[in-house]
Image: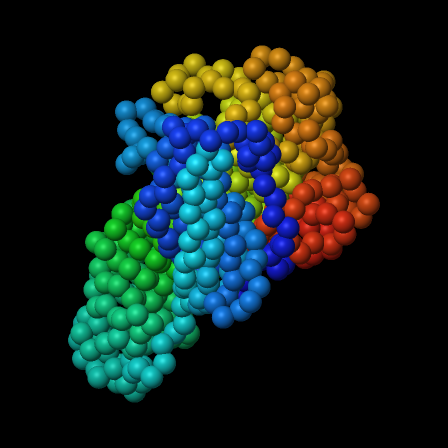
Length: 571
């Protein structure tokens, strides 16, 4: 199943402005040449990521064009060029594992379980370059195994043979009997706490699944085995703590269609966990969304890699989804009433991708960057409504921000100069109320927690074609203690958003009604009104927005005429 309703391919390649500028007018300078190094690749169900180390290129004009095709087909498709990363943004007393110098990026919205050829063409006008063709397969969507045994389980402490007429009494004898490819049906009852430690095999999971005759209830559980599938189970706590916790190097776990209620950490992975599929769960934490603090997560990835977190409904936590390490896809989630941040990829490395999520009533920020240890990160077609700021900027590396609808009661972030490390296109910035500037970039007192003050575009900057509403505020933008009354004066002074668009929320959306306390029973979905000036004014991005109606892509999360995406558990 594709994560978005639209085909995501585009034959036109869009180069950031700084790449076009950097490629002109430079002679051969040996000291600025690029020397290619180690090339790494990896994948998820819908994405491929590459990291290509380099040495040299101190002027940051090396580029790497990307094409891809399904193996065995003739036509190459364009993807975005790799991002140039030269990271030196240390954070407080801690730092990234190394200062990465590389070309790095992702191909998104691919078919599951398919084998692709990826062509990389690295070049530098100062010298150095190389072309490579890689063969990389995406992972398949997990499927229940067939051909194994089906066991029946009820509560108890021994007895039975696992048949429908004589089910196992208790989880322990059932686990001792189970093998790879087997399905264990848990009938209604209270199962207490348990450790799942019987491993399956690749594509032959040990499956623990609710039988369907009532809730199979757990007080808590640990998983200390790989290739395990948990589906339809109920996790309830009266004492907070952890709901489902990984122990050790747990690989290829499926956590699907379960419910978690009352836990401080509902799903808690270990740092060694890899390649989990966490989808279609309902999570209600132990947190008060108004008075709650910054501790307690819905899904805590705990600095681990390779995961897919899709279509979960998460509420009453401090943060919705936290701490992906690298190569994680987070999409289709409905995150509501969080006392800290909706998405918290803090301390993450390259190629974490977040698209088509809905974040509502985030008390502090919708999306946190506290900090980035290495880019790029990808934020595409998310819909955010924050009581605080849209972003929590601290230390920024490269990131893509495209087609997001960003609504907040405050300005987007008081450190919006951190947007200068991004490729930003086709976003909408909308005030929920008040008369504040839509963007504020002001000096921060504590340099330990921010990048050095910079308010001017540089080699990392490509920010344009976004839409802004500043309501009745006499100041549209406040940038380095200077105030600008409109978009034209701001763009001329700072040198970004030269094709930005002034929009008005009551004119561009079908409806815009944001109460002080939005209800989950009345979800917000800001689709565009016919004839609005947010339609057909965006720009193309290869592999991101290729299939669109009209003359050009629209601004915001929702392309005009397309149904809004489905957030939360799928039917």
